[in-house]
Length: 290
Picture 1 (cartoon, rainbow, N blue to C red):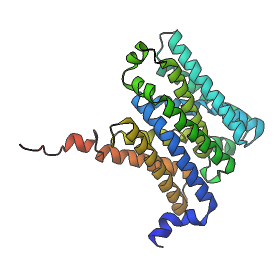
Picture 2 (picture 1 turned 45 degrees about the vertical axis):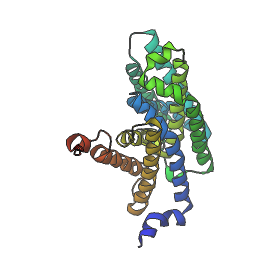
Picture 3 (picture 1 turned 90 degrees about the vertical axis):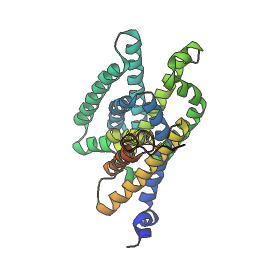
Picture 4 (picture 1 turned 120 degrees about the vertical axis):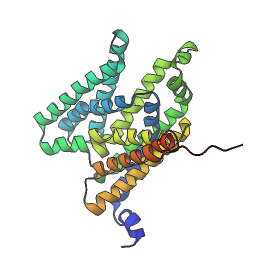
């Protein structure tokens, strides 16, 4: 087997591999920048919480309409949006911090989702919702993730400045009347949209992996927000491509293979990155002598 066959052969030979690769590209374009903003705003665990929060809505959509892409996506979006709004209201109406209210609501949602699927479906149904099937993505699924990526990039182009300001100096944004609350809510909607787009391919448990691991890895290679977003999208796509190849050649589950490759990219970045990595901290380069 040649290197060309090893790296590109499966995508040239099989249509389902090409569809999965295109889905990975669309997910990378949307999830990369959103994950970077989550990391910069120290909301990394909120992404994990939201990925669980979409489960009951997706489960209700699955039980009422079967494996209907739009029913499951609409249910997941509404459930995730409800958790985001409720957590935000609790944090503003009480003394509880936002991360604690997110944790409380996502645990309730996760338990409710598993209960709903278990009561009305089977173990196979539950595994499908939890872990997805990226190798079975159809035209409708591709349109969904491409649409989510397009909306995400367009919205971030509009919200870029207030989001960046809020990442580093939220007090200044409030002082100049920059609409911090509306910006925050719009950003949470983008998070939910990308998780809904990702759960069809990677499942509710894995969708957040392609959002957070590349973003965390990009922090060790770039310093500007736009360059971190570009690196995160590149790492996410490379993880999708490499994960699909590992899945094909070694007969592994595709979703976990993709996320494990993204995890390996994070560990490599942590060790060898050019910005704040272990190599930079422990083995600093020699300073120029004058």
